[in-house]
Length: 181
Image (tube, rainbow, N blue to C red):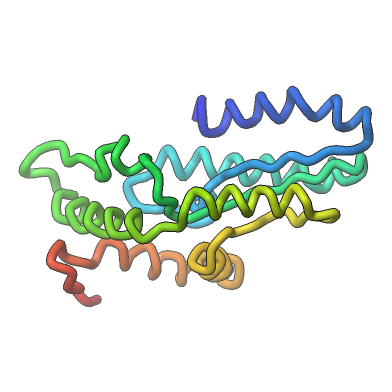
């Protein structure tokens, strides 16, 4: 929360007075698809990204009155050193961890998603496009995959489709087969 939410909030708070006084500006915050759809075993990260989404959504309407645009970029997996830096997986506590099998399947899925993610250059290009847009939107997803996942949540107020999609991340065995359900 300190880095992924409070850091973003502090930097935003620091720049808004100048933009407000100038009656012009842009805040482009790179959040994550995890701020829209929570991934299993990423509880604190998801919470921080949901908090950033709420902060920016709340500020967006207010700051438009001062001609300051607030936008969030919500990428899904990006091919960076992130997965290697976190070891590419969630660790289990011990051999009798009740989540061991779920975590094993989740780690395999995340490794595959990380390898198939979009390039960092494509995310940088999306930031450039947002900055150049004369009237930027609040939300952007820089890949077809991210747009599909975000759209799924936004059109299903019950949350059932999101639970079905995130639950699929836990149903695949390490050999690539599905457990069903």
